[in-house]
Amino acid sequence: MHFTRADFPEDFVFGAATAAYQIEGHGFGGAGSTHWDTFAATPGNVLGAQDGAVACDHYHRYAEDLDLLQAAGMDAYRFSTSWARVMPEGRGPVNQDGLDFYDRLVDAMLARGLKPYQTLYHWEMPSALSDLGGWTNRDVANWFGDFTEVIMDRIGDRVEAVATLNEPWCIAFLSHFLGHHAPGLRDLRAAARAMHHVNLAHGEAMQRLRARNQKNCGIVLNFDYAVPADNDPDTLAATDLQDGIANRWFIEAITKGTYPTVVTDGFGDHMPKNWQDDMDLISKPIDWLGVNYYTRHIIAPDREQPWPSIKALDDPLPKTDMDWAIFPEGLKNFLVRLSNDYVGDMPVFVTENGMAGDDRLSDDAVDDPIRAQFVNDHILATKDAIDAGANVKGFFYWSLLDNYEWAFGYDKRFGIVHVDYETQKRTPKASYHALAQALKTNR
Ligand code: IFM
Image (cartoon, rainbow, N blue to C red; front, side):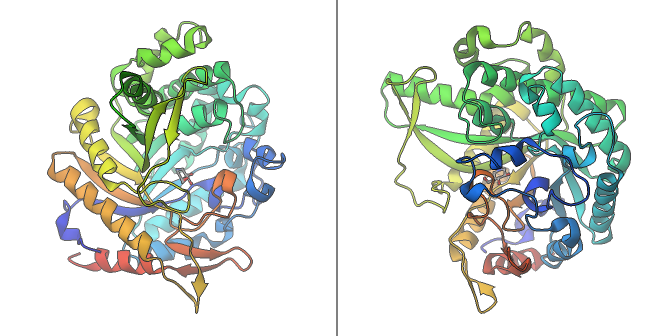
């Protein structure tokens, strides 16, 4: 790695991220059914119909996993708390075993000097709430607010920071319009409603967090770098619309209380009635912003298709195992743009960045030089953004472990630690060792 801690501000936090359903083993400890369990059980949705029932068995092996973070010299761990583990029906009865697990987990982080960065929702909607329409039902905001109170009553006194939602674009658009993630809808009206209700749920959860004086409350958004394929006005308009749907819809709502009109025009009458009345709650101040960044897309108009009539073209850049183009400059550009146009001096964290690789275990080691280069380049892009004035306060690699990569099952490996799913043996990859070495220098 071509950086050391001395290249970053003294309070800069290095860490790694995971999410509950992807690692814990949802079959353990009395967790309730989620829409991912039923989505995965439906043919054609998930590679091999794999689900998160066992995953990385982190539920039982969390101490070993936290030891790996500590041994790498990390400062913080970004984790999520599963709604269906804490409230198996989404509402009403609380699963004490679930609360006890998160209580142990947070204490174990603190015992190792790791700052707990919590995310309240990383995609496991309880099935009982899915039955009622999940994110398409306006009541989801209050249900989510209630869950927020239950989990924060138990661990809120010890977490360093809390995010309401992870990647609302994925929760809403990818899952209700593109149909790639649970609940797998491809429906304009459902998407319009989910797109608004995720923001409303964020606003409601923020209000509940504020009422209990919770410190460091924010949200984690994913940003998709849209590049026009050419300078044709239709191409520029398609690119602007892509940016509107993927990026501005969320950051503009949360920081300014408005939606891009190119998107509300497209949703038309399918937007929930009187959505304008919710914008005040949605745009109440946050303390920090989480930025998830992975790739860019080259955008062109798709005249064959109805709104939004956008397509992504093949990108000539080298790609990861997800077929995602590697473009570190996009991270720098987003961090600077966010600082200039939306958040000013508010602390920003790169809450996810990483890559899937074709990793092979050989002689108890995994040589992953492309990942090491990827991490290095994106951490340096973050430094460039800081040098250009962005108030970036941390960087979390996605992910600590190979894990359940949603519709791709266990096929895609993002970890700096290899997981053998037969034995659950963890093997730190070469990128883990390189990162650990960089973090130890000039500590
Ligand atoms: O694995 C996901 C994670 O759950 C959310 N952000 C993107 C990652 C890689 O696809």
